[in-house]
Length: 241
Ligand code: NDP
Image (cartoon, rainbow, N blue to C red):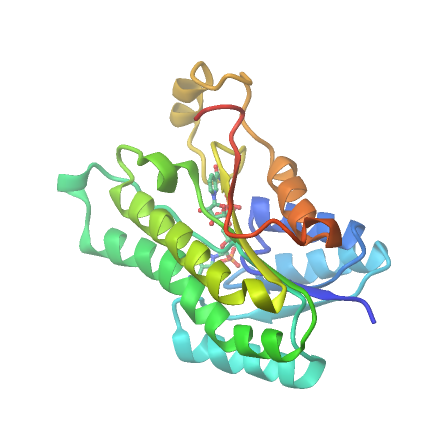
């Protein structure tokens, strides 16, 4: 039976690239979305043309009960997943004194609580599968070094890195690896033009990353041959740090 991987936020630039790349690598997919159901359905169709199956799950990762209900129903029907990519995330940038309560809460709830809300219903079934497994979280360079205008986002992504490393310790002897991929600036809707131009000269590779660059790192971590890589942060940032 083909192994199945859940990708959260698969309607976004990076999530879609990850899902397509994993389909090319031979995995079946569960593509998750919050609001863009049409985009998720279209992605599932594209994955079908690659000869893999894909089903769509829709829920808000900040809704703990809703996430648990959707995930438990899916694995009750189809079985526990081999892999999970916690990719869904948002930014809401502002200088700290101007940051709204909503920007703080929304970014923490989505990027950090989302880790708990998605993985908590899934980890025990993965362990009980008694097979190797893979968990990859998508953090950010902001979580590694902090970024101005992103106190909320940096906090959430740093927390995500800590959570990833701690879970890796708990699951290592179960043959489930838990790693973080930390992109630098990636060419997606999330990146504003002004930020892009300002930062380009600071990137040693002199280009922004592509969603496919992030997907390649995730795909590698999903492979059998990555079995001995766990509790790591793999930076995909063109040498920025
Ligand atoms: P996008 O804005 O393109 O996509 C975000 C995705 O997350 C969408 O699929 C969206 O679903 C989903 N999402 C957002 N909020 C929620 C929520 N509350 N519940 C469920 N799903 C949600 O972002 P990117 O593809 O650029 O980013 C993907 C990840 O990569 C994020 O974690 C981001 O922080 C990280 N990252 C991005 C960088 C960049 O330069 N772009 C750099 C470093 C890290 P829907 O569209 O269906 O609403």
